[in-house]
Image (cartoon, rainbow, N blue to C red; front, side, top):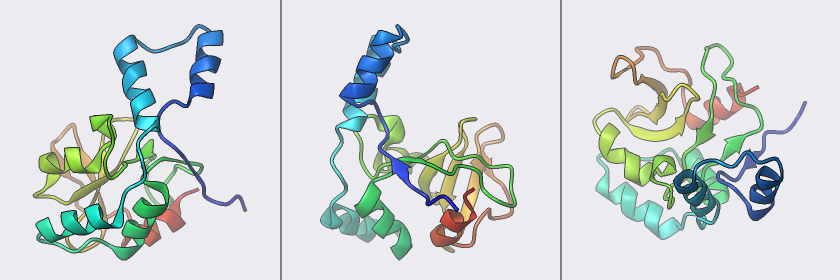
Length: 160
């Protein structure tokens, strides 16, 4: 079975050159943002601890380890077993590209949970106060009633 890995989100200098060679670069603003996102440093324990103190809920320890090790990224396995959910990317704790930054998106979701990932359709996976993972459907502006995973570790185990 193939091991789950995470590709850093954004565009590396090598990928920019590949896209340039094939003449398929995104518009200038998107290109700039994707390069900035790739250059984002890993999350620091102190900034995650500071964020957790501001919350009225604990953050799953497995998720904190994930942020410290990967700071988000594109999973090699992206389908969630037992649901129709496909993960486009896990959010970085902080990123120069605001649409990829947990702390920048948190204010939009603070009543429902912590945004941890996005789908290709624009929906958001949330780590709720009960530590379960729910899908926020952007079309209906609400959370789906059933969790897609019982914890962050469970979510990672369900990826295929």
